[in-house]
Image (cartoon, helix red, strand yellow):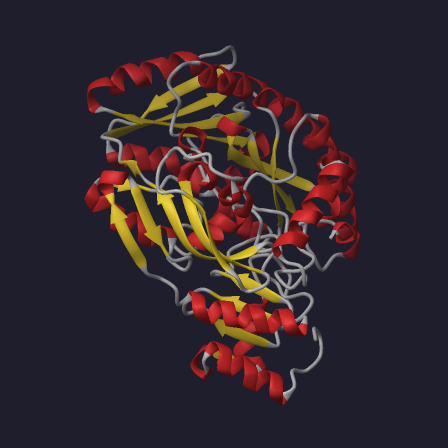
Length: 466
């Protein structure tokens, strides 16, 4: 039924299943639900607003019977086209399922619906002295369901882990319309296969998440901020390796390379010499009684050959000043190239210097300007290709650059995505990372969860493998 008009009978059945007040079919109303934060857009034939598990099960069964694609969507902050209805069908928006069902500090858990915003949950937990560790940059507007769909993390993942490390259980509906529970309410449990962590990161291709039981963490008593400047990326990478090798793990360890620093410097004055080739932003948290010793240990580890300056913030104003450099980068990049290509890859920490060098070489060979920053503590690098998408020659050269970049990532022992997912943008590269047997097993898993191939079809895996 994809890419054709819905019949009057199907529209009536959809309204009966979902509720007339939860369905939009006017193209003008549906238009905004056909995009995410990539440059892709496709008009869905209908938008259904998720209300509860019974409603969702009925909609799934209707779509399964008719072969209609059903694409789950949070707030559309993803960057890979994973929520774009490129095969038509129905977009299922979770924006109305925003209930925080239960907060249980004694058990260190929270139970929420998928439409709850990340920031909304953090605000509810803070008075209780807790937080949920995943902290994507888009926390103010992204949903918990979206975070789980991509296994999104953010800077705190270096110490506290990703969604997979901070989720105890899920309720979900499979592609037949059957509801089930995965996981536990405890931090230990090995009964059956771990469907919870299988569903996290599956980008809505296996099941629709209707409820999440999250593991929450006590807020640290205090935090300290440092900024370390180095002669080049190799010195910074050596510092990252040294920091990560000592017992105390920082709660944030971010980096900016020479190209990123030059980009910011072009638009705003920096309190850094032009000889600086890389910067690390470091935050340490923990008990107040031990914070000075923690800072001293991290500072010592950061003091490798090539360190030019190590600054410590003593006041809130100084913390803001130190982070100003990092926070000014994204607006600057948007100003230079509002439609830049933003890729998300991971390499072993020991290979970060080699990877940045390789990117510089690719930039020279293809004539594409590349700026890099990201989460240094786990080698998660955001590679930004500053291009004009209306320049066909530049787009073609960028495609060559991306292709070679992905090959470089894999040669260095890395992975094609750390937290942005695969969606449509990286689907055709997946077979370079995963071997044929793994792809066959994943295709069988997809078939088991979604035998009619209606849940976000064609996303995440190469088309021939599903």
